[in-house]
Length: 231
Image 1 (cartoon, helix red, strand yellow):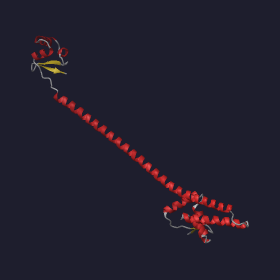
Image 2 (cartoon, helix red, strand yellow; image 1 turned 90 degrees about the vertical axis):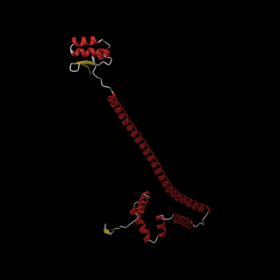
Image 3 (tube, one colour; image 1 turned 120 degrees about the vertical axis):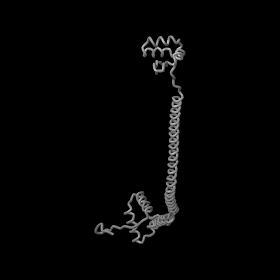
Image 4 (tube, rainbow, N blue to C red; image 1 turned 60 degrees about the horizontal axis):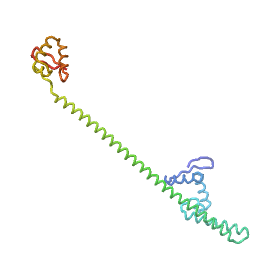
């Protein structure tokens, strides 16, 4: 203990955390504090008022109800004796109504606690279901994205392979003789020879492009005596 004032002492003790949290919550619901409630318990204990202490503590619903019933009956009996009258039907009915009200109050409190627990469990289950559904959606989206990326990669590889195959298998034009070039251009050998002699090389290439079915130009190689394609 440590001093908090001339007439007061600071008390500390060990308590189960769950029980302490429930105690604090109960005090708040009663619009009081833990300190005030504990002081009230101590005063009742010192006054040997165990019955009242049990009623406040609420450890057992049956004990609390019996205590309230006993207090209510004594209250109405004392009132009747003070008025110098014997218990009448009205007094008995009033006692019964009071007992019914107390019983209904405690039953409602118990049912409220059970309902709260059930509601909390239901809310938890609903949250879990929503999280599971969301995770399923995310997994499906990831699978679709992965499939799309795989398909794009396959298409790219296929296109690359097709282009590579085309380049490999595309035959390269071989040099042609004057006779072969004349047949390709659809003219006589004399015309090919005449245009080659009379036209400058660039113009001869252009003339060949105009005649070639594939639009290729041709130039004469004096070293080989053949005509080579020009792109």
